[in-house]
Length: 142
Image 1: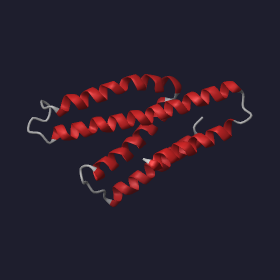
Image 2: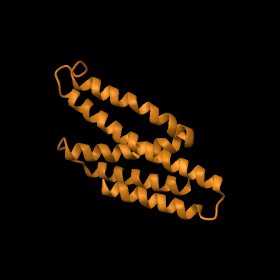
Image 3: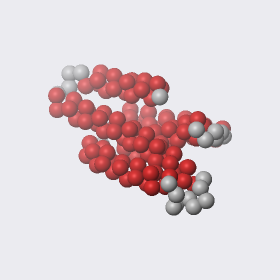
Image 4: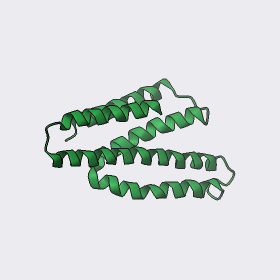
């Protein structure tokens, strides 16, 4: 979690340095985009929480009609409110990359920490490439 916080702080610092001397309207727009990115990251954490309950549901004999499935479903449904805010301030493609990368990282951590799953070398390489794609997107996005 500290790594994520440091990364968000670094992105915010880069964005603040980039806006120095820019018109105030540009800064407000950038602040909205940063808030939208934070919302997307929080939505991905909420989505991982829903995935946790769905993983528990999948372990039951009746994988849909059990106590865990409605909880996971309700958590997923609740993310729609945040999506509307994020979609208002960012491009769908950018949101998709941020959300997907966060989900990949958070689900990998959940699988390793909670469900004792192991990552293959190919999966580790894929995660590193996902992080690299987000860096490129945030650097060159318009």
